[in-house]
Image (cartoon, rainbow, N blue to C red; front, top):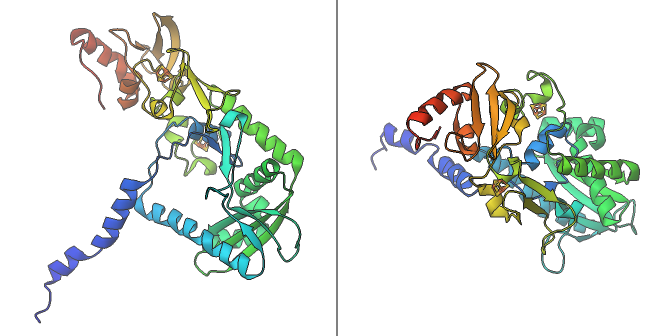
Amino acid sequence: MAAMPQEVVDARLGRVTRAIYEYLEKTQEDGRRAHLGASLIGKPCRRQVWYTWRWAKNIKHEGRLLQLFKTGHLAEPRFIDDLKAIGAQVVSHDENGQQFRFTAHGGHFAGSLDGVATGLPYAPKTWAVLEFKTHSHKSFLTLVSKGVKIAKPEHYSQMQIYMLEMGLDRALYLAKDKDKDEMHDEWITLDKPFAEAEKAKALAIIQADIPPAGVAAEPGAFECKFCDFKDLCFGEQVPEPTCRSCAHATPVLDRPQPDGSGTWACARWESDIPLDAQRAGCGGHRYIPIFLANVAEPQDYHNGDVVYRVRKNGKLFANGEGPAAFSSAEIHACPDKAGIPIAGELKGMFPTAKIIG
Ligand code: SF4
Ligand code: SF4
């Protein structure tokens, strides 16, 4: 058989990988979760947690990273098999086949456990929360040398919250090095004051209607280096115009939905907002003014529109539904916010014109 031409070989190289990555990217879950997750609460920057909770960005991951997350999920049944093999009794799902889940703060704070177990070597009669994590080699070495509380504070907080909410006082942290398959386990005891403080922190973040202080005051800080929200925190970007960034929306703390999830209410339409509608937002959206603080200062409130003065050039523009105002979607789409008032002058000449990015 004749050899395949090199250009055909080259054209085929990596096509399967690309197809898999593209599939994963196309089918990835919407990262804008209804609730504030217990897995986030131990992160060092409260502002970052608040931005996530307020859906400031719909973060999409690339295929390679999604493959990495999948590897982590696929490791869970293996952790369970290994525990069962040494005689532990493991329960990872309830009678309906659902992961154990807690909700608090009106359904707005929630998390799902990897499982609970008893019959572990050092505690044969005690039920413990289970938390399984896979690590890169570097992260695993830090974990082993420093322990989970120091090396992975968000995992530690997550387990503390789970123990508090499940009424258990022990947790088993079981980790694996993805490169070498080496394992590490830690037995964590409930620190009730700490867990309650983390739960109170979650409530403060849920109730905050402006971003809490960030972990750093400068964009060059190490903590901010890989933060998805850097351009919001220190730049001119504004959050996506969903209900979560709208001045009219409030999380309701005392009236969860029938499925236990949290309720959001809209003061503009005087109604609760279904989850899908929260993601879409509406024409009545008005940015919480502090979201534009890096760009403009609020000056006035006129017929429901908020009037801003641009810091760079002193010109005015309005966010709202009035004929000369800009919708939040237009403000979000405009890469140079200082140019909005200039676009406003054009709007005067061409009233139906819109900024579409
Ligand atoms: S950029 Fe820095 S301060 Fe701002 S949210 Fe991210 S981590 Fe926090
Ligand atoms: S006005 Fe519209 S975008 Fe704002 S909270 Fe109500 S439904 Fe959501």
